[in-house]
Image (cartoon, rainbow, N blue to C red):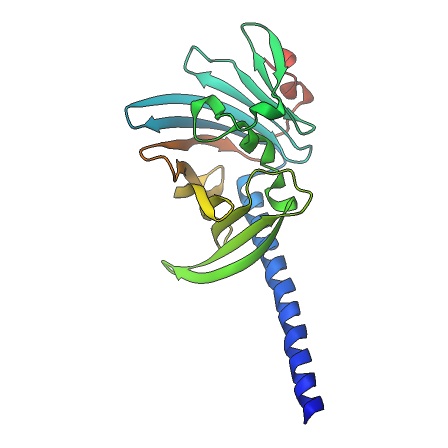
Length: 248
C-alpha cells in the first residue's frame, strides 16, 4: 500500500512538471503568434501620438521602419515642425538619435534609458527592449477565460537571471488568435503602468489593434495614446534606411 501511495505521488509530481512545461511552451507560442501578427520581415507604418496631461495635451506623428530579422529599426518624427526629421535608430542593440539641424548622431547612454521618450509615458528603454520581451523572460499561463466568445489567456513573464531589462514582472492578456488586449508592467509587486490595445480592425491585410494607450498607474490624469494611421507588411528595406545620413 505504501509503495502504491509513493507511486501515486510520483505520478502527480511528474504530471505537474509536464503540464508546467506545456503551459510555458503554450505561452511562448502565443507570444510568438502576437509578434508575427504585429510585425514582419519589413514593416513600414505611420502613427499619431497624443500625449495627455491634466493641464495640457501635445500631438505628434512618426514613421517607423522595422527590420525584425536584423533586429533594427528606424523611427522618424514627422510632426510637429520643431522636432520634424529627428530620427531614433536601433542597430546592434545600440540606440541613437539623429538631429537633422546639427547633422549629428548621438548614442543614447545607459543613464538616459529611463528618460521619457519625446515627453511621453514611454521611455527610451522601451525602444531598446522590443525584441527582448520574449527571449529574456520566462513565461507561463496563469489564467484562462472567455471574453465576448473569444478565448483569452493571461501570461505572466519574469526576467531571467542575466536579463538586462527594466521590469520585474509582466502580465499580458492575449486572445487565442494572437491579438493583445492588455499589458501590465510591474516593478516588484506593484503595477507601475498599463498598456491597453483596442480599435481592432483590418489594416495591411491583417486584423490588428490600431490604438495603444499607455497609462502610468501612479500618476493620475496622464496617458499616451498611439494610433495607427497606415501599415505595410513584408516590405523590402534597404540598408540605407538605417543610416540617417543616407536615408533622409
